[in-house]
Length: 389
Image 1: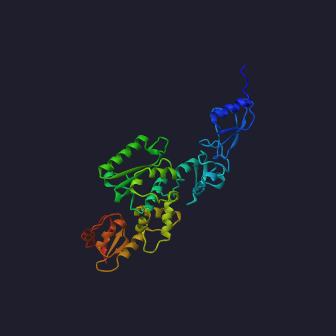
Image 2: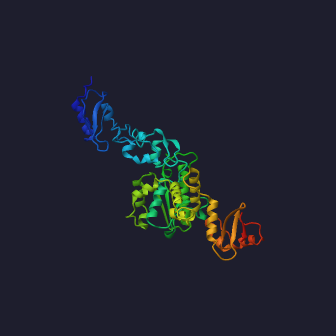
Image 3: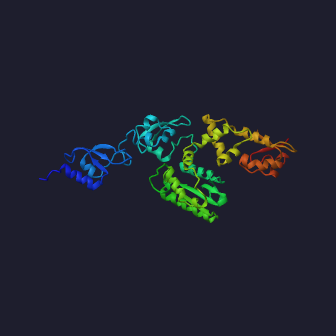
């Protein structure tokens, strides 16, 4: 018959296996009767719990420090304790005090921007740093993080760069003065865990990355930087940036990283709408686009979305009409532009209209063609009508 293990022998086993990480507080009786143990760790505030001796020796450790946590305790590892910023994304105080950031529990959250309710798994909110609400700007946490870094560097850059030589694809950022492309690669570029309906496979994603990089170098891009953003948190992305060529091209010593993280968690749609509501009279969508480093078309998209949500009042036709009137200030041969029999504005001349056409109408209108329509030699041009005043 096997001799029963003594309390002293059990203590010796624990000491040899864990070297002081776990302290036995209770009295050992047998291999399956639970015994009180303390985890000698500051992260869990030296948490105490009962566990079967055999399970402890098998490596079933602290339920607070396990990944994901097996136990959630207010004051130690709840969302309220460790990641209260998640409440700003719509998690209620009640739920934040019940669950940890890595919980697989699906809860109902309320969007802090538009008030819409939706059900979402808690750990998805933590991983994405977003609740992916329909009122959002559609940009990822890493993209907005890097955008703010570039803004703090006070350099000119373009987002969603779409050169003609890359077909219908785009690059996250292009810094023209340095002939540099920057890509932010999320977890889908590195593992198969990223599962979204109709998403590319890992092999397709990496093949696409390779193609985009080869095309960039083939067309004269000097610097091509791929940032590892598989985790959407400040430290990970900060370290990825510091270990990239960005740290060679620019002085990053004065970057306020907390400011980057704060901006990355914001809804740019709402930011644009608030700016629009408080803009000075002369400012239009072109000015706002320059302020936020986004295309005018994106500004219009955000303002239209904001108008539907009640965040602002925007009318594209009214703005274009106003821009046209502001531009037509004196001189001869003023010209008025129409689309679908609606006036879009009055301009000082055909040349003035041509000069502003790409910014205002997202299409280049040639002076000679405008003149032909004005002189009744052509019925219309690119869907527009014109007449001299």
